[in-house]
Length: 141
Image 1 (tube, rainbow, N blue to C red):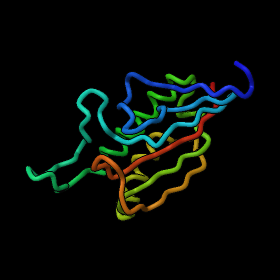
Image 2 (cartoon, rainbow, N blue to C red; image 1 turned 45 degrees about the vertical axis):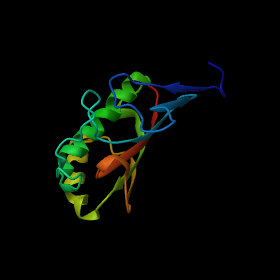
Image 3 (cartoon, rainbow, N blue to C red; image 1 turned 30 degrees about the horizontal axis):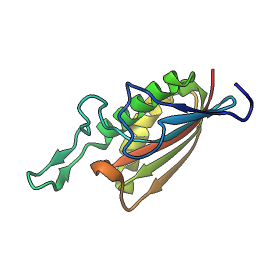
C-alpha cells in the first residue's frame, strides 16, 4: 500500500453504517474508526433500550450500550488489523453526562492496563435512539 493511500474498512460483523461512510479508514499504520454505537449487527436493536409503542424512549442501560459499542469497535479493529491494545485515542459522546460513572466503569474493564487518550463529551442528541457513540484512532499491529 502506498504511503498516502486511504483504505476503507467494512466489517460484516458490525452494524451497517447509518449514512454514507466506512466503518473505518486505514491510512499508513493508523486506523480511524468512525463513530460507532451499540446496535446489534444482526437485529439492529440497541441493547437495553426500551421504547413505547408510540416510539418514545422509555429507558436505556448505559452499561449494556457501552459494552456493545466497545465490542463493535473491537470487531472493526480486528478487521482492520488492529485491536483494543493498539488504541491511541477514544472520543466518546454521551447523551447524558449523568451516565459518565457507569460508562467509565465498563470502559475500564476493556482497558484495564492500556489507557488510551480519551475525551468524553455530553451531546444534545445522537442518531438511532442511542445513548453513547465512540470513535477511535488505533495503530495497526
